[in-house]
Amino acid sequence: MIKSNIDKGKFWEHITLLVNGIDVLFSMRIIAKKALREFWKRHPDAEEPLLAWYREVEREDWDTPARVKEKYRGASIVGDNRVVFNVKGNDYRLVVKINYPYRVVYIRFVGTHAEYDAIAAEEV
Image (cartoon, rainbow, N blue to C red):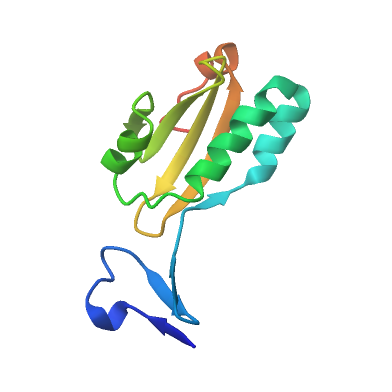
């Protein structure tokens, strides 16, 4: 049995489904993991922290930038729904664009500090 909670007036809080008696919370969708894989092929020491970030974020429910900051206090909100994350003790930078209403995280850039310094994070 699948039943949404929209009829309970909670749509704006979380989108959940009741599937066989179990509440299932919709989580963040991350597009595209391929960018992370390509980066860690060139920088193998980044694989573990990027995978950890990916696994944590896909379980989040970010509807505002403030919710991102609750989880990642060191993240920078830079404009146009872009967020910059420090990866592996600030060795690398990850820039994402978040569509908060639809809970989608778009990976826009992953790179070294030198590569990050050459981009405009709010425009990638």
